[in-house]
Figure 1 (cartoon, one colour):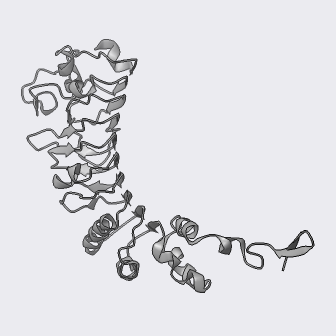
Figure 2: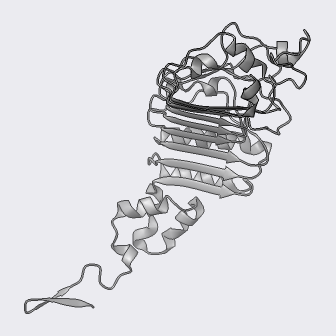
Figure 3: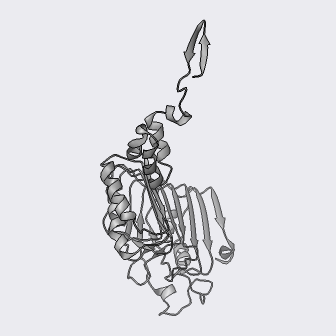
Length: 325
């Protein structure tokens, strides 16, 4: 055993004779196990007697799969043995799924909320995953990231999550969502996602404490056009990025300089209207603003006619489209 001398006495070094990781306290090992896939974390139980139950208190639960074959059975045992042990992060990523997997995944999401999860990440790659049309309720959830999912109306009411500050939605469909609501969210990102096109309303975004907004339809290739949402006033907004692509349902390739083609039956120009501003009311309090339009966009033109005032604006970026606006 390695020793060091203190005066005339030999003193054993701490952790001598053991691997370096074994001298770490349990709390640190729980944190380390939270960075690996759940199956690998469970397999550490065979390393030594001390490791037999460490995985049950890992601070994160991560699953990365090509498909969900066999995962429900694994998760049933894992969650049963973990009990209600809290964890900070639940990250589930898969490429493909079957219809029978849907209720299982939705159940895992609800279980994670019961376990006081603070960061929830759900990512499907090839198919949009249908989430239950139920509101999220959690006093602990702080960050929500959803990729390639289908969101219904009730789930987009985040008022039951008073600690939620960050929401990131990408490559997703919001076919019947009338309102996205949160008084706590400070950063909202919606990229390459489709709002309703054929419904008789526009999705309203109500987030009065928002400081950062990214709204980027980015040429979504999901087969449906994106209908521009309505932004409520955001008095604390510091920075905003808005891009409407040529695939946006409010863009008309035949529009004139006014942004309207003059055809009364044109769905892009005269489809779903709104009495007040769609975008400018919500963006008018921004400090830094970036606007990109890839074609003549009716909602931009109509909003400008209301002569909005940007009293706090410090920096403004516009693409070439605005030169003729």
